Length: 283
Image (cartoon, rainbow, N blue to C red):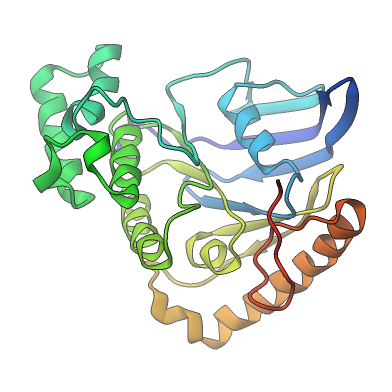
């Protein structure tokens, strides 16, 4: 895959964001400031409802802050752009197109590649995500993990400067989820994009991240940024290392504090604390 485009830096400057539901105003983000470093994999984790998806939407340009500013490479984000692409929790593949056609769709629709260039890039990505034997299958004929791999390939073929991942592996079984994490790590380490990844799973956050951003309960901001200094390429053998366990202990302590606050406020917690805290799902 071509790395002709440089990765981008995203900056949140004292961002405030309010949501309105049934005439009730709720402050989601308040004084939220952080930087997504160029070419790094930044992971967001925090209590349910703390604004992780709101941050993804602000970077994507689907929403705008009520206060403060979100910038990409020093310029204010004012709307969606092909250079910032989102992979959502639910599948967004076109059901009437094959796996191959879904991946090719973006560059052909944008007219940024010839049909032959798009064809070759699609074949390369199909191999990288292990779907070369499923190129002519429709989304309904693919498993959940295969659909997620196809969506990764469909986003990456557009060579975005920023990849936004909104809990893309949620709902997959444990074995499929670990396989997806391995595919995703390999793809990230081969590309030149900046990545922002939202998760509720502590182990997933640590194994993926360069920088782990722990969020507070709402009104939310960044409680702490933990630099994950595990070497790349990453693999699951690292989870028993002393450094991994040190990072995990620190993250769990921070999340425990915020999960208690969230639980006290709403009675609902959505952070996996690996048995240290009971996890309940939001309705």
